[in-house]
Amino acid sequence: KAGVTQTPRYLIKTRGQQVTLSCSPISGHRSVSWYQQTPGQGLQFLFEYFSETQRNKGNFPGRFSGRQFSNSRSEMNVSTLELGDSALYLCASSARGESTGELFFGEGSRLTVL
Amino acid sequence: AQSVTQPDIHITVSEGASLELRCNYSYGATPYLFWYVQSPGQGLQLLLKYFSGDTLVQGIKGFEAEFKRSQSSFNLRKPSVHWSDAAEYFCAVGPLGQGGKLIFGQGTELSVKP
Image 1 (cartoon, rainbow over the protein chains, first blue to last red):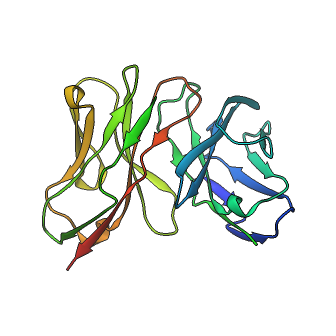
Image 2: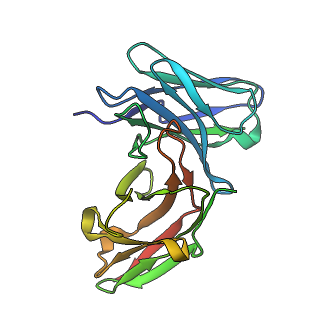
Image 3: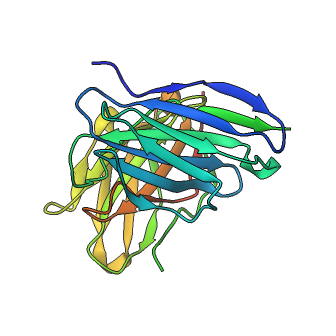
C-alpha cells in the first residue's frame, strides 16, 4: 500500500508569492490533516479535512487555506508569503471518521521563502 | 490550557544503554497519548499509543511507554538503544473526534554514541 505522498518535496518562493502544496493520502483514508513544523514553534496543527469538509482549524491567519477533493486528495495554499512561512509542511492521513490520533505522515514539503 | 512538555531537548546515550524520554501533559479530559519518531528528512512515524486499559503499552522497534495519570506523564523507554534509534521523538496528546488535531511536544533529539 502506498504511503502518504506530498508534492513538491522542496520549493523556494519569494515574499509576496503564493504556493500550493499537494497531499495524496493512503488509499481508503478519508481524513487529511496538515501541520507546520518549524524549529521555533515545533509542530502546529493547520487544519483537517474529512469528506471534502474542513472539520477543524488551527490558529493560523487566513492566508493559509486548504481543500479536499472527492478522491480525498488535499491541497493547501499559502498566499502572500512571508519569511516566517518557511517551514516543513506535513500532511497526515487517517482511516477513520473519528480521529484516533493514528496519523500516517508524509515526508513533507519543505518551503523556503526568500 | 492543553499542552505537552518534553523537558529534554537533546539526549545522548551510548549504544546498548537504556533510554527514557520524558513527557508531561496538561489536558482537561482523558487524553489519548502518542509517541512519534522522526528521522532526518522524513515524516513522523507512530511508535505507540495509549487510549485506555493497561498503562504500560508496547510499541514498534522495542519501545514501550507507561501512562501515569497521577503524574500526568507518558514516558518512553527502551532497554537497549541501537544506533538506528538516533532521531527526534515527539510526544503528542489528542482527544477522540477532534478532527485529527494533535498537540505535540517540542521534541527530544536523541543521539547515540558508538
